[in-house]
Image 1 (cartoon, helix red, strand yellow):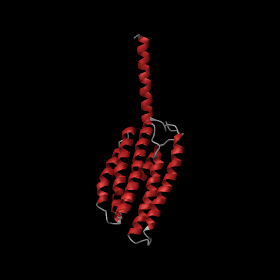
Image 2 (cartoon, helix red, strand yellow; image 1 turned 180 degrees about the vertical axis):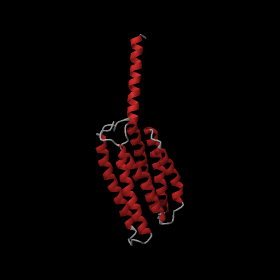
Image 3 (cartoon, one colour; image 1 turned 45 degrees about the vertical axis):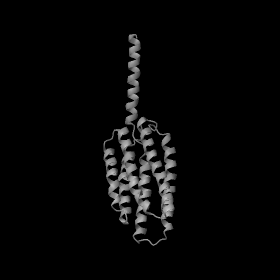
Image 4 (cartoon, one colour; image 1 turned 45 degrees about the horizontal axis):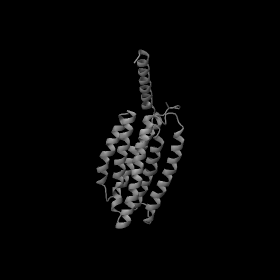
Length: 208
């Protein structure tokens, strides 16, 4: 191999390394989705608490309407935000692509597990299985933050991942009490809404 060929290989490696580093430093673009999830489902959890505790007098079908409406609102906002983010600079960077895939996996896991729990509840004629839902959410949110932290290099996101995993068994101690839904809402605000706002603030006018 000639000196020119060696230099060419070294230049190619340096170029690819620069691209990888640039992609790693691109700001994450999923903040608005997290804010929407935290706000929509957090408010729904507070309303659920109000119904459970007797502050609002409604028939049991209200739970289905409440969470069904929350799902529709969130999915509508999700589709809009995905389309909006696709054309933004940095959207196809390695960090954003991996983080997006991680959160998509967590979201799909939540959705299919909610369907499974609905089937189990219908088959058993019991709502006991639904009580595990908040714990499931925090477990999968922890996974999403772990992927995001790894790909972005932002250490503060690891605190969110660990916090979600700690909240997973702790929220289970509130099963059977309306307070569980207040704890669930607090967790959504803490692990989705607030960090989502932080990610939004990190986004410059022109993303790398």
